[in-house]
Length: 270
Image 1 (spheres, rainbow, N blue to C red):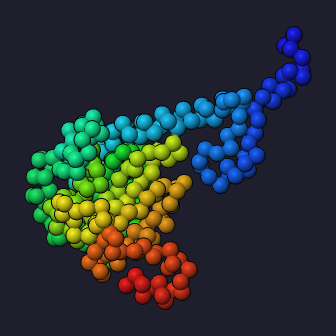
Image 2 (image 1 turned 135 degrees about the horizontal axis):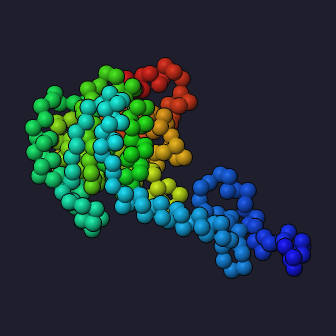
Image 3 (image 1 turned 90 degrees about the vertical axis):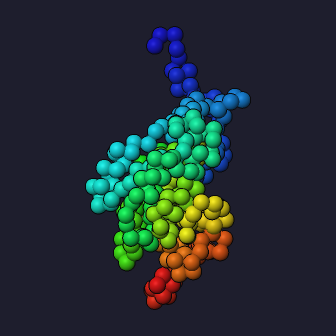
């Protein structure tokens, strides 16, 4: 390294000024205290931002591998159905949200011919705005919550492509279920391209509004873990069936049960 004094080699990062809040980064995935190099970001945080942005775009456009998802569900003992919304492709899905809320004609015919006893609950896995989330988080969440529903009649798991949240309403109505739970990929953020949303609706039918649903958000290991999400979902399902409603009339007091005496917990979820 002739011509380059050791002092220059040892001070190559001196231009990066650390942020005094740097220690707070251990508590959040948010982009805080990234430091500064002149009037700009240091190279490493800038490259990390570009990578996260690319991952978020991929999450929106990546198609859901339904064959792999059906195989995974079957291996875990679930029966499945496959449906598609009225949006014929991703371009229409993104430009026409209304098409993602209705079933295609073929899928509607398939569900209309399903001959099952009306179930207590039907789970729908939809790609939504992140197929990554649906493929990674949905099955582990089902594995965490279904053992808590041993006394329930659980219908087949429906895998839905080009799905919006309200697609579950038509699916639930055609299958005659009391409750439908939509597990759907949420809009990706720059720190969470694989976050799953859970939407619960009692007496689902076409025309249900968002005020008639309950939502559990950010289900993923780095956010709300599977066991915590299953606890909330079991609580909401139990009380929805008991009260005959979901939405603004059903409050999520599940966190209070975590510190309640065992006897009180058992009474609350009966």
